[in-house]
Length: 303
Image 1 (cartoon, rainbow, N blue to C red):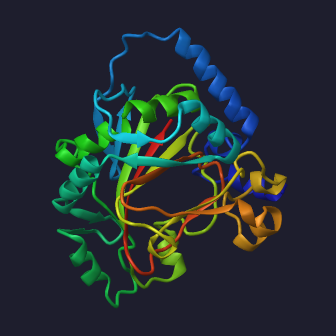
Image 2 (cartoon, rainbow, N blue to C red; image 1 turned 180 degrees about the horizontal axis):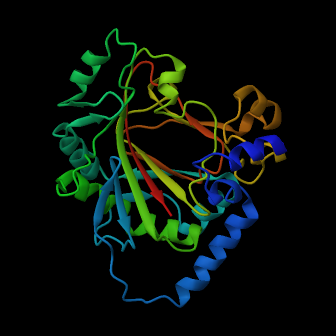
């Protein structure tokens, strides 16, 4: 155990949060401190501009959108209670006109794959490139990195991320939302060895340690099941981990996790286009690599 901890500490990319944010009581302390400081914060604070970095849309000091983009099937208290218990709540839905607009705008977008240094006009070009390619594009991004070019898609994605109901839920779960990171990607059907895909997509069970407080909202923009890139989570694992889970790598082998957690805790999240869920990704989770159909998904991370 201590050997694993020492290896983390000597890593040149070591961050304090990567060690300490693993512990539930420290995440709870962070939440309470955020609630406390929020009471005394300047109510007239100005929202930061849209920024882009590493194909991700970033908004600091977010303020809720004027319009509603998401339909939610339960009240906030029920959602927060389930999120605290399971680390997951399903049943968010992008409104039909929002799904339509996202689909139309995404069809006009360039698709970027940084690792292969390639930009494509559409998914068909990506599929052609991937055919019989040992180094395929397993994930391609629809948000470009041009800081000076804020597209209609960027604006719509930012508005969805600041939906008043989503922002309210995230605010209450975290204590206060200070920034939002949003990514919009295609996960492709292609032949690749496990190691190549793992460098782009977390297809092994792991938990995230981005910060002392964060929560994700995911939306599928294509019909999604286990054969088309569905997300899987181990319910309640944000609250319950072995001591060994908290030291060393945040990844764990599936067979070992199945010995520790009940099989009823393993949940594959399937849904049609527009279906969404909120997850505390301190839970163990993974993405299934698409086998039959590609997956288009919007990922929103609140801090």
